[in-house]
Amino acid sequence: MTDTRIRVSALTPRMDLGPREARHLHVLRLKVGDVLRVFDGQGAEAAAQIAQLEAGRAVLTLGEAVSGAAETPFPLTLAVALLKGDKLSDVVRAATELGVARVQLLVTARADAREIGAQKLLRLARVAEEASKQSRRAVVPQVLAPISLTEFAWEGQLFVAQPGSQGRIMPLLDWAAPVNVLTGPEGGLTSAEVGGLLERGAHAVTLGPRVLRAETAPVALLGAIAAFGQEDQPRPA
Image (cartoon, rainbow, N blue to C red):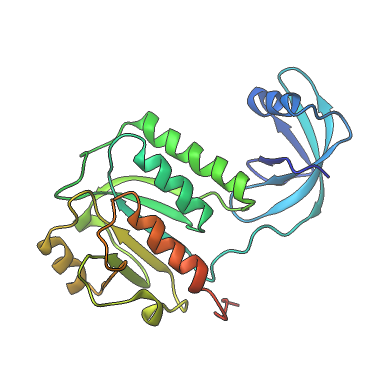
């Protein structure tokens, strides 16, 4: 079996691939009879054999199920303020590698942008898909269109990165329900925004003694969870 992984819409006995995927197989110099991995972006992954390979089309046949990278006990969501340039792409890529199930974009008082176009949202979704392939996850995170901070609702726990806070995420983290983390834009969230979230049950947590850039803060917070926050945690039945 090669290390190649292809996302498909569903794991079925016969899977037809379009020109983009077929071209990728040609670039990798794969041929009929070679075995690779397919995943559906929802957690299922299996071996598959190339049955046909043409210039603009390929057909795969389904093999045995295989185990993908371990996921968190309950979904992990990153809510992040809109950032300028390619910063959001960097955040989405790292967040995917660190195990998030979805990325919710937010419009905040100091956000670098008030909206993003449909094409940029599609590019972010492709970044998440490529990062899932690279990190060997069978789940591709959703990248959700921006909403206002007041519209953001969550299940389980919400941890807000807030400079100067005394709270630490590890003693508070509980995987008995979904976990959400939220980071602001350059300049941070306003005191009113933080206060509103705390009134709704969020926890303000520190990221250490330094003030981090807006694109660094979510990676630091998710990295702490990935490294230390899942040990010996029960998984739902």
